[in-house]
Length: 322
Image 1 (spheres, helix red, strand yellow):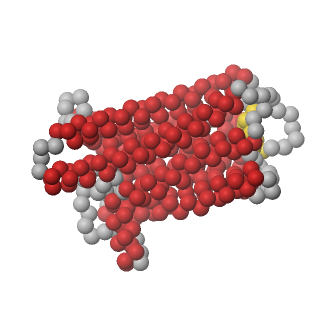
Image 2 (cartoon, one colour):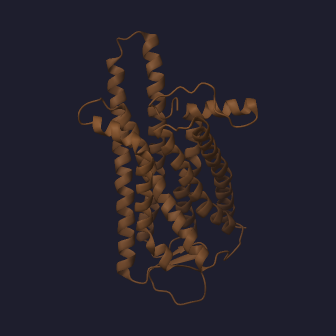
Image 3 (cartoon, helix red, strand yellow):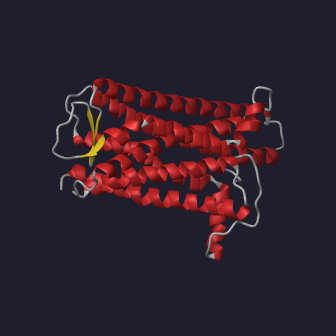
């Protein structure tokens, strides 16, 4: 087996082995908290949606890539290709949108209670589920071509405007369809990545200003205040930084492919890997920084089953208490 296939097998097997258990643990814990405590704080609703989207990304992209690395060919028929392709595209879009929503929500939380921010502080937390559903509808509406134009790889005539998706192909038929599809997706991606970047910069700037303002406060009070705010802010900014980095690598490789006549298989594999890696890395960050998850899981280990932790303190900081 050549080195490229060995690295591909190791990479995607690791991604699947880490990503699926991590996202399942987050989903199961938050769902049980919601059932047991009759509520789930808005930031954790966002994390629940992110874990669900990540899980679908790994199942629909990571597992097929892993299977392909073992030399298995043509495991999907036309209908399966349409479903897998549609689910992957939508879930990938949701990871972008929900990560953006997470950073914007944290931005709203730490913003001062001024007249310009107050309406958002009141309306956004109450409508997090509605916002996530709206984002899902938007992403579903972007990809009708997956249902209409994706087919299994077989011996039939295709146009020159096709994308190879491992076991399937996406035949756009016309240049106009190809360009329109790429343009809409690129606008969606860069819009939400830009928005999450701006929101994260605002978070960093706001906390920096807050740190300067509290320098005169007693050391013990200052440290306790920083623990809550800085833990939440660092977690959000870390997630966004990871996504922006991986998105940059993915986009850089994509731009490179536009200027070469023949793309090396290693480049295509690397682009898919970086495009899927966030779905496996983000659960690690969430599990390490979300105190509600950590407390519940520790309590679970002591009891042997998932149960809500006895102390259910609430706060508006997404990664610190709830």
